[in-house]
Length: 103
Picture 1: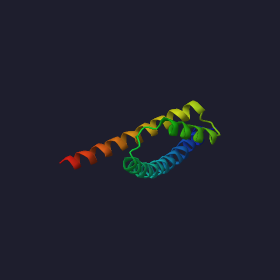
Picture 2: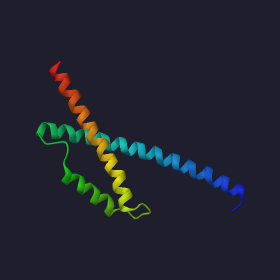
Picture 3: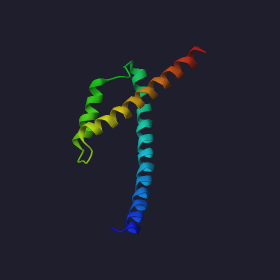
Picture 4: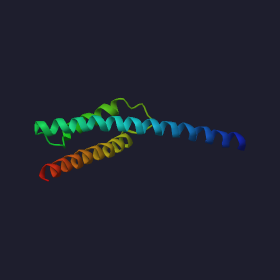
């Protein structure tokens, strides 16, 4: 590969990454909207925000569809972070709603 080819490959690859990142943001926001629905349902049902068995189901689901090159450990780490952020969002929204009810 020549230097010019390498520079072109880098530019093309970065453009692809930028597009994939935009798609990931949209997918994460779609997931978040669903999590908000789940949070409302849990609140009405009196269910806890944290459900370790459900989180294990999520990990098993994503790992069963992983064809690499991400390792199972890497994928789990990514999803642990996503789930943690979603759980935090549910707690923040619930606390805000309770404080509005107290006002």
